[in-house]
Image 1 (cartoon, rainbow, N blue to C red):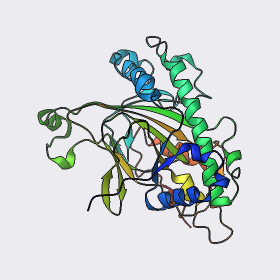
Image 2 (image 1 turned 90 degrees about the horizontal axis):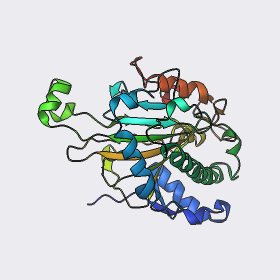
Image 3 (image 1 turned 120 degrees about the vertical axis):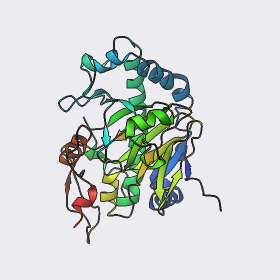
Image 4 (image 1 turned 90 degrees about the vertical axis):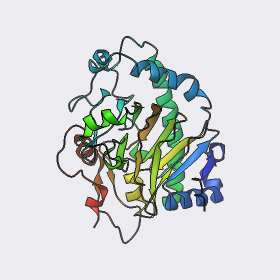
Length: 316
C-alpha cells in the first residue's frame, strides 16, 4: 500500500481562521497524525526558484576563505557555519543564519554578494507574515482565541532564517576516509534525526527529495512540490498543546548525485517567554523558559556537551 502524502492547505483560506472551522479541524488532524503539512497559494509563488535559490547558490559558491571570514560562533550566533552538530553528530551541510532584528552588523554579510542581504531580508519578512497567520490558526485551535499566543512573539523575537546547502556526497572511497568505514550505516546525514525547538518552521526547498519524517516507526520522504511550503511544528507547540500535537522527528539524507538547497524560517518566541500547556488541568510539562531552552540547545551546535537538552526533560 502506498504512503499517503502529507496534507496540503490553501493559504488563502487562512485569512480568518476563526471562520473556517473545518479547515482548523483538518489542520489539527494533520498535526496529530504528521506534525507536518504543506501550504500553497501563499503569495510567494516562484520567488524561491527565481530569486532566493540563485542568491543561495551565489553565496555558497564563494571561496572557503570568504565564507570563513563571516563564520558564526558561540558569541556571534549569526553568519556562516559548516561544523554544526545535531545530536552530537556532524551534519553534512553548510548554513547561513540570521535574525532580522539582530543582524544589522555588517560583519556577517559578505561584500562579494551585494544583493544577498536585501533579498534575504525581504524573504525573512514574508516568512514572518506567513508565520503570524499560522500562529493564529494554532491559537484558535488550542485556546479558541486567534490572538492568544501573539504577545509571545511581538517585538524582537528569536526567530531566524537558515539557508542550507547540502553538498553532493563524494564517492565511496571518500566516504571511507571520512568515517573509517564504508557501510551504509555510517553514511553521513545532511542533518541527523531531531525535532525543531521553537514554535513552527516554514521550509522552501529545491526539487531534491531528501527530507524525511519519522511516522509510525518508519522514515517517510516528503516529496518536494513546486511552490508549496512545508510546515512543521516544533517543541513549543507540543508544550502548548500538552502533547496533543507532537513535534515530529525528522532528518535530511545526503545525495550522491546532486547538491540540495533549502531555506528554513524558524518562528520562535521572545527570549523571555515562558511556555506552558494551554490547559486548565492536567499539564504534562513544567514551564519552559524559552531563552534558556534555546540557548542550551544552541550550545550543542558547536561542541559535544553530552546529551542534548530535549523537551521531554520538562515533562512532569
